[in-house]
Amino acid sequence: MVMTSPPTVLLVEDEQGLADLYVLWLDEEYDVRTAYSGEDALELIDADVDAVLLDRRMPGLSGDDVLEEIRKRGYDCPVAMVSAVTPDFEIAEMPFDAYLRKPIERDQLQEAIDQLLLLAEYDEQQREVFALAQKKATLEAETAPEDRDASSEYAKLTTRLDTLRNASSQTISEMDPDTLTVAFSERSDPQ
Image 1 (cartoon, rainbow, N blue to C red):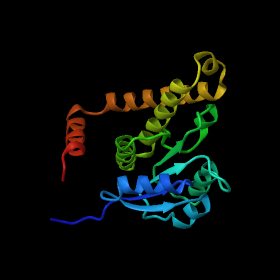
Image 2: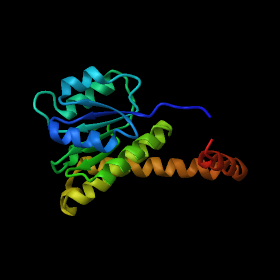
Image 3: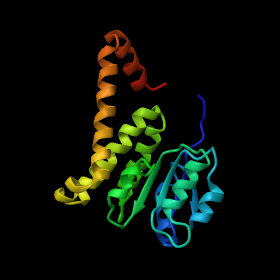
Image 4: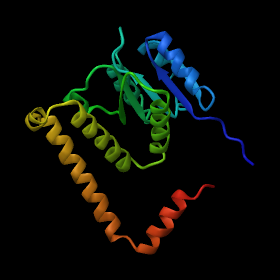
């Protein structure tokens, strides 16, 4: 049996008590790196980080700024933005994979990390579909229908999501059914 190290999660939260609670919840399953500021997060991020939980609103370097710098440095690990602030349409263009609203329960946090780690296994197009679908669902839960109808960002997000879903469907319909069966059985087959 091959022993593998636990996935590394970078937790970025400026409220130390809340960060310490999250670590308590996660420490048994993950190698958790804790940053209490955006500056600390940029010191702790490296190629070994498998997923990031990133507080959006922090004094100094905000989560938005940290996310931008993480992507500039070429790190492609999945990122969940975590915030008590109601998201607005600007999230449509941001390069994160999921959006979590505080307060967060232990099982919600665990599920989010599991989704991020699973997402890391997918190709870029599948990750983009997931991220866009998450953003669309978040905006639909947090904004009024008339505001969505008036938002060019929401319209672009919806169009891009539909385009990617149609392209995926077209690719799948063109594939040989035997190839699909093998591909999906290998994906779900634990090694």
